[in-house]
Length: 253
Image 1: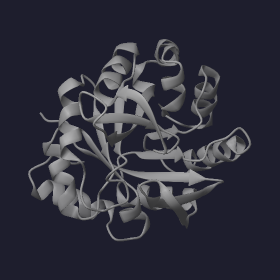
Image 2: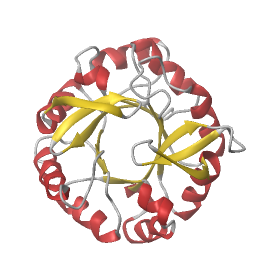
Image 3: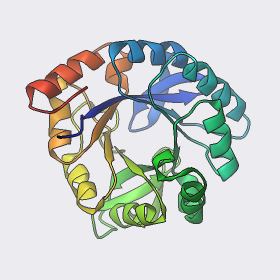
Image 4: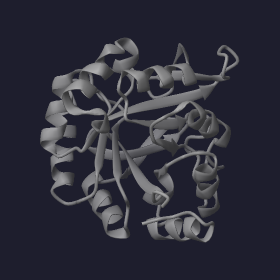
C-alpha cells in the first residue's frame, strides 16, 4: 500500500511572528504562529514546520516559548529549524515539544553535527533543510545556499544531500529559493533530481500557488508537499489541497 502524501504548512517565524516574503526577501507579518498552527491542525494538516528565519542567540528564547505553546495546542508532528547549532539545541527543542529538528547552516559549517544528532536521537528526528538555487557553478546545476538564500556556498546540492544522508539525515526538506514565494509551481526538476539520489523521504518546498501545483511535485518524487503563503493568506486550505491530490490519484490522509 502506498504511503499517504503529507501536506505540511510552514511557518517562517521571526521575533515570535510568522513572516513571509518572495525569494526570502521583503519579509512581512503574516500572523501569530500559535494561532496559525492551531488553524492548520484543525484543517487537517499532517505535520507542521517552524523555521526561525532570522535566528540569532538574542531571539532564541522567543522560539522555544513558541514551540512549547504550539506543542500544547496541536497533536501532529512538529519540525523546528533555524539557529540549531549543537546537540544541546536539539535536546532543548525536543524537550519543548518538537518531534523533528531541521538543520541547515550549522551542518554545512560542520557536517559531523548531523552524525552527532542522528547517533543521539535517531535519524527520524533529523531533517536536513536545503535552500537550493540554480547555478552553473555545480555539476547538477543546483547550489546550496545559507542565510535564507542570501549566501551561496560551493556545495553541489545533490552531492551535499547524499553526504548528509550518509551522515544520518532522515529526511530532506528541499526548498527552491528560485521558486520561493512566486506561486508559480514547485521546481519539479529539482525534486526529481533529489528523489534520484535520496533513500529517505523528500519534502518539496517553494512555489506553491494553486491546488494544481501540488500533484506534479508528488509525481516528480516528493513524499510530502510544504507551503506557506497560500495557507497564511487564506488562498487555499489544507482540505482543498488534499482534495486536489486525491482527485489526481494520490493517497492522502
